[in-house]
Image (cartoon, rainbow, N blue to C red; front, side, top):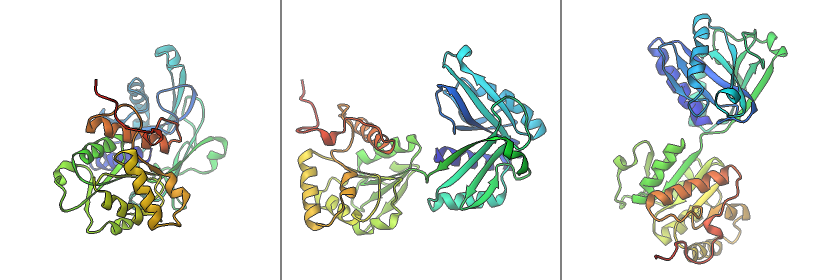
Length: 342
């Protein structure tokens, strides 16, 4: 959710420059089921526009109608949305609406943390009933410094009587694609669509250029050993797409002391086995934890054939690994990846 919150902060800054009033809506509690879980947010301005959504699209107009009171008074309020009778969703949403006017100090600290991949916390104080109550609002903890979502309103004493919804926000998820051929273009597009930060590492000899990777960070590395300078952490997935066995092996050796949560290898099962065999030969002390995050062939078994389908398969596997979900990974499959042509 960090990338969604980052987008809302960027949008709010742009709206404030145009002198718009801005309200932040946060789902802080849920009875039953709903399209999104607590912690999802949307941003609204007093000109009738909004960014993001707290549902699949059925709640947002009602949220805007309720937010008009906050535009007028600047005071936070709680609203509920009962989807059981209106939509058959079998859930009641509890949504905190608050004036969004963070300080310039917050903006600087927030984007410094985003750039340097620092986790942060958001605490939203609310009452689980409709109305306006003293002390409601959200606070962001950036490196042990607290910032209110509304710099003009930072009440403390009243919050002892309120419920608090807490979120631990991890760095934005990052997809690191090593290789810049046609299939890498498709994978980068799917990664961006998912909301990930996408970095593409290219060699000078590869065909695709910056215009093929709009929205991504494109880097040219002289040697694979330079990959360790790219700040790889446990919110990073890596996919090796060089289509060159020797170069893929060099990258694996260079990555051996890093901590990604996923490494995907293209190609057949036999190619994966050969890569891992030579990796262990070069690095006999390599950890089991590192080997466990290597997925080859990359992707889940959905019968992918085209570059777009293969990209969908890989993104799905990365999501499943990140969210601790079981799927039928291609690395579990023996024999050929593709079905026989009929």
